[in-house]
Image (cartoon, rainbow, N blue to C red; front, side, top):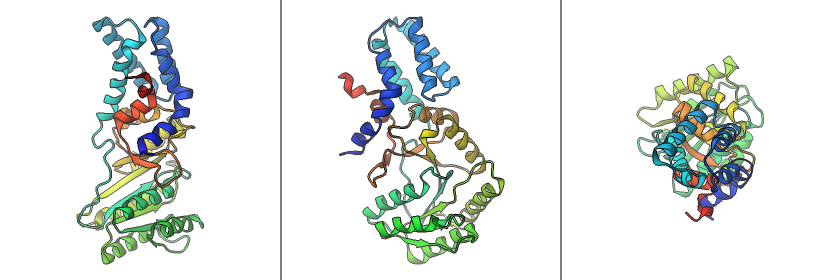
Length: 311
């Protein structure tokens, strides 16, 4: 099964609860005032956000008037294009992390507890090791006793070395040691797994900044990607998390996790429109194969069920 097929399968619940309402709305009834009111309600309920919803509806109304389009069916294609354009307007949207010399490429993973950082680290490592690249993990979550053990499980699965220290150690020192070990061994990629933290915990956010400062200072030309793992189930709360992490760190991308039957569809649009941060990967399950590059046009098609409309 291709990733697109898994994405479509994973989005089944989203379509049933949210975008299924959009599909019905655009199924051929008149584009009257009730249509526009319903469109606003469905978009806001799907975590698109009030501002973006109002702009989308106003833009679509203008198109309907200028092109003399009278039904939802006639407007569907325009609506699909507008959603796609929002996503494609963000540079690097869907672009995978580039692993190229000088080695190692450094991936710093940030996010709150439970957002899927360690699982994302494992899935990315599995992807690169299958491509023949050498990966090293830095277990920079030194707060939780079980954190390094969880990373070591992924390391054993993928044949990835884990650099760790005892609980309570300086997380930045772990990252520094792992960078040196990566260089010494000629590793292609260093993945730094950090402790989950809320943006309101100043000391923990400062530690994250410290890790980034050290990696940035010592990288010597190597690429440094700072990826935020964001649980898509959080909806607008997730958007607030992303805003605050982006203030603390120069985020280069988002890994949207758990985008399955419990997620709301619109949060991805809100992230693209509000933060202009690219979604680099999207996860739709727990399996190693369930993390793929984000593809805007296919994503919108899967979300709206366009392939089921005979288009």
